[in-house]
Length: 221
Image 1 (cartoon, rainbow, N blue to C red):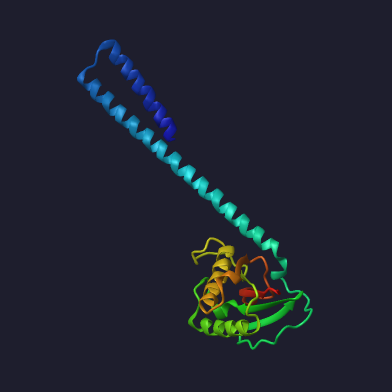
Image 2 (cartoon, rainbow, N blue to C red):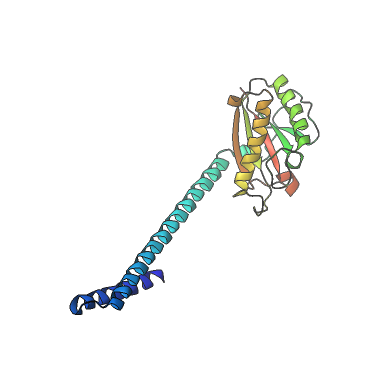
């Protein structure tokens, strides 16, 4: 529509300009010519602004698609973190608080912390009581696995993101794992030992409550 209006004004402007050159310009014609020139310039600016906005929106769409594809690729790289595996042995017995369980998956000890223990619905900020739970987890890791690498992964239920402010469940899962990692790092576990990932809603469990969780895999040396 704006392109058609712009072309129309251009044609009218050209016609008036030609007439003025052939027959001389009256005062009214000069005013109309000036007005059309101004309208033509404004339409041209509006067209350029609309084109820039469209290009920016397209660039943002491509960026988000690439970011989501990267998160999905990351989720597919480590399937053992996403599903229960056969227990093959036991390590040191851990004294874990309520809401935290441990299982051995193909030789890797994985601690699962219930998401509802850590976070309010749709949030990635730790609850006050969650810090007490993590303090106990940190204490056990320090005593029994003082040098092991830790892989933190965030998981969500399958409900789509609506009002939480996060772009996708992948983003929410990552921010939750990052919040846990930052807290345990502040409690004395070296940042260099911690890795982060997110599976979003790609690894649901039997219920939504079970699906919402953060897992800490203790990598064997």
